[in-house]
Image (cartoon, rainbow, N blue to C red; front, side):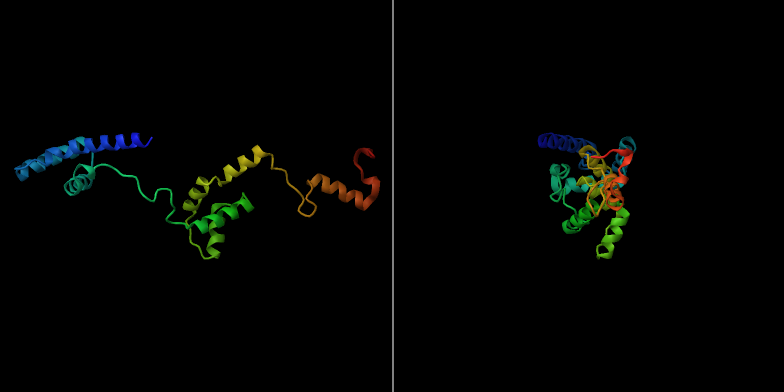
Length: 177
């Protein structure tokens, strides 16, 4: 895969060099250079700024100045520290229905300033978006709600409560066990 990226980068570098090479000829008068530059900009649909950047890059680094290199910090968050991201993940796992906006407010109360859209993106990348957690819960069968005090499903907790309060008369449908 990395070779394919390198090949694509080399192809793009060759294309860029082919575009600017007429502008690099020695001995061109200013009017001819301006004429070639205008034709190139119109024909290729690139901006003046891009063309200047490409020429400067070629003059500084040669052909390698055209080859795009992968960033060294790819995949590392610069806007959110790993600790804050972990805290946001814990907050989301606590209550998956919490919105990213509410999580941002909670983090801000703790002294961490995070943009909602940035937080949403990072949570999504970690598999902690609301939709991802809901799908995971649905697939895992963990969508049943339980009574906090008894750790029983609400229907069973209600039945047990009625039995304790009323005795056997509270058994539904007249079934006795």
